[in-house]
Length: 153
Picture 1 (cartoon, rainbow, N blue to C red):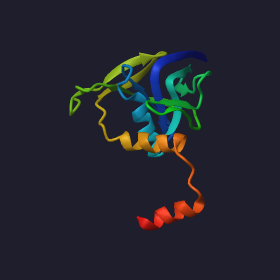
Picture 2: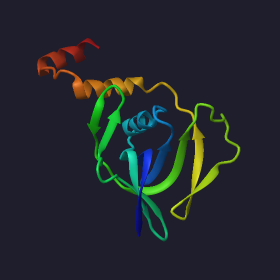
Picture 3: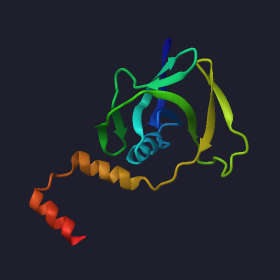
């Protein structure tokens, strides 16, 4: 088995299948990963992953120095459990991605063919960033105040 670091990508796993998210700095890689984690995906890595090249599979694993950490823009570093998964897809962030992809390209990674899909991100994730900011930087409400706040909703 060979290992290599793939830098400047984020990666999550859904049902044991890894999605590598690539794009230029500030394009929304971490934000998309965070939104997917909110929906039940598991973190593999943020800003880098370790590719485990095996004869019959290509696996994504957490990077050695930042395993379990995400850098959320305007919030800071947060921690989440990290896992390893078989690489299933590369989402290539592109604001001009076609609405209906005609053909999905394939990229060779470690001798394995991986589908690459141009993918436009939306702007509906600010709520997730705000919730993360509250979790990381917000005051911890006493239980009585929290209960009163819930009753008002």
